Image 1 (cartoon, rainbow over the protein chains, first blue to last red):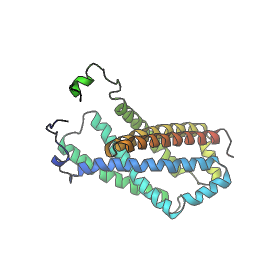
Image 2: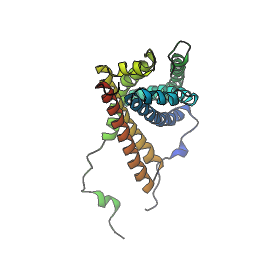
Image 3: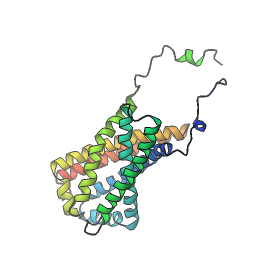
Image 4: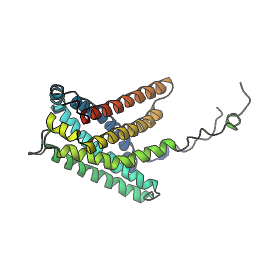
Length: 131
Length: 127
């Protein structure tokens, strides 16, 4: 290939900006949710495999490790949901100005953390069913 | 070595006619997943119990089974599209193709297993 001028690459962006961080986090939470799908299908197959098999699977799925995973999944779900809606709003051509996207990035962080806390409280608070 | 320019090689071959298909389906599935995922998470959190009888009676309900199947299909599709872009960005060469093939197969298995499990319960095969 001949030497040609390159279009602006990662070096020209200020990577510490939260709006850039919000984009890569959306990717990582998406990957996390893909792993969550594996757990979901394992659970569904266990439900379909009869009571004894389900009780065995529930023993695995209610271990402390999995409770930690559910906590993380509540965050990945909340974040990816809000960030996805933000992307859909962007696709309509709104909110793309720099100041607007900075503001919505912070809003995204705040709303997803609040949602996560709500989900975790709902799932694990006393009186909730054993997850 | 060919003397034809890269541009000359592609001119006249036409487009692949795929254009924005990946982009569009990613958006379409994301719109569908907003209500489906919220419904699923809230349903799980409001189940009276997670023992087998309670889960079976929830899942055997026709509307529950229908929306669960939709949720599984749309979620695995959306996941496949998203994971594919990440692989294309960070993995190159033969490893990229292998990874994409493996991930496509894994997503197909997840979708088929999820739908199979829900149908088995819905038709009373898991009691």
